Image (tube, rainbow, N blue to C red; front, side):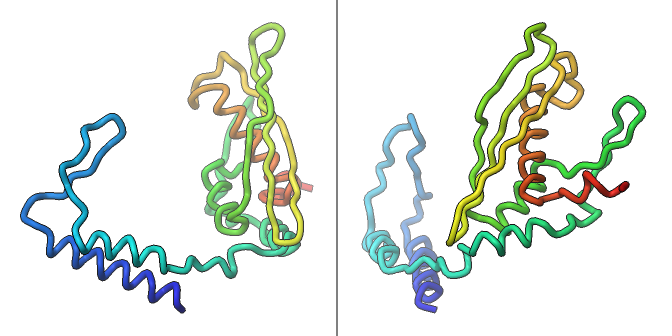
Length: 186
């Protein structure tokens, strides 16, 4: 509760400092921009001091790995599933950005990385190796997978991005997220 009170104090101070500010609009410094002539007011100093006292709630964010995997193993709602038709065959998939949001919700401490990008010897395809790591309070687990895209196929963006998205989805499926889509027809 102390964290919420601290945030309220910060918001109140911020609102008070902007309403009590002079009629000049606030000026900010962007990277590469000129420094702002704005000087810190007493209200700005109070906001800085209040921020030091704010407790960031971390309880409930981190969970044991078994709980995270249980949540990820649940069926993805049908409204998130999209269809892709390739060579006359319909393939069900969940877009990478939906998978990303699901991971953010159930495993906020997850991380992902491209491990390798390999172009085929004939220069017609690219393969991306992707690793997804889940961090629980009690353990850490990772899964890797690959995705391949034709360099000639630019219908849906860059081939490397397409291969990365495919590898990302497959690595997540190895952790249980969307895995049901691979065996629905069985």
